[in-house]
Image (cartoon, rainbow, N blue to C red; front, top):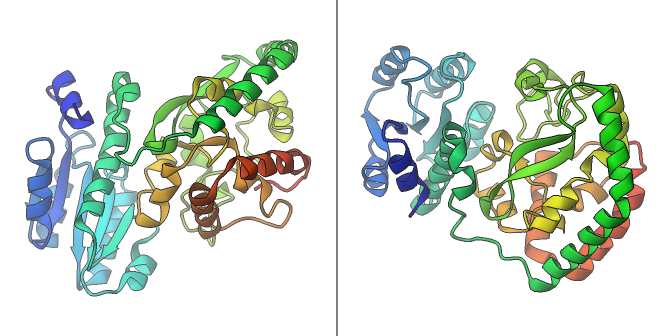
Length: 362
């Protein structure tokens, strides 16, 4: 049973809708989703604008798919209004171009949209990206189905040698560090109100969603304050939006939390994730769902087809040499997915220790 069918059976009144502007691809899209998703068709931008203007935060479409050929200025103004309105800003947007002008479309729309595809494009790829976005929206609507979410058909399967190594190392470290972990937990409890362990939903290998563990280093409900500090995102370049989020001098961090983060001690509970099989010691960073939803284009998809890990190429590359661009992160993720091996993992682990003590954060 796939995720969409399961959601429908569990929640009869839950509806996911796609508002589609154009005619070239909508028939194939409608046929693919059949009764699982409502595809609402529009042939004019003005008609779509009128429709969006009459919707509330509960009744609007979940995804906009826009065929863009001419009048980029009009489309840009519309997309910008959608993303700047508190009523519609949560709508995901996909642009389809048919004039082989992806560079121009990217320059115009990239700060506001999730994906941009230009003809000739692979129809199945677009369908998979739509399903990926829908899955994360459904997970947000229906938390009790999070752990039952269907994995990608191209699911990553961890080699036995890597899994055995992970179990031996993580289990041994947890036994050795048990008294130290208990001490850290006590200090966190005394330092600020809230749970000792912070749990968040992350997307790992094969788009698997799991509870990601860290020692709590922020105030309770810090996630809800994220939008207030978007301007401080270290990964943003020239004030443009970025796929990844790290807040410079984050004011939500507690006093003891700063020590935990600077020493990377806050990451130690992830050894339990490794022991459970959610992730590996070495791999690509498992992402919060709000970040993972932005990484659905062809250039990023490969990162989810490799292992998720505590440490990886990000942590040991360009450390102390300045910030990385999204392109550099994408290349490192894809390189690891394509080329990882037991010996590469050992090299990354050995390089991680000196990387931790350097001041520059990647």
